[in-house]
Amino acid sequence: MKRAFVLVWLAFQIGLPIAMLFAEYRPAPFGWQMYSATRNESEFRIEWRNDSVSTLDFAAIVPRPRAELDYSVLVPRHVCGHFQGVRSVVVTELDAIGGEGTRSSRYECEPHG
Image: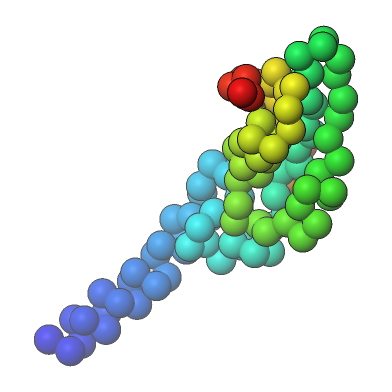
């Protein structure tokens, strides 16, 4: 019984990180590359209600980014919640690992007040 437990435990400890090597995005949770791979780089464009457009200085909002957080969702929420006059935030994710293309998403902000 003890031997079976050890074998199952070892299989889990080795099998899960191996499976995460084939995850769609890296770094993947529970993968060996969790903190060693670089995150996809993102560009943030703010579209204001007065029809002007500006780019966001990511380092001003997140001075020390963490690899396990998805800033393509968190930053637009923060911008929409803390800056008045923002109509939407456009996130363009640049594939820094594979170098194959980009993906853009638009997050609409609720009007304040």
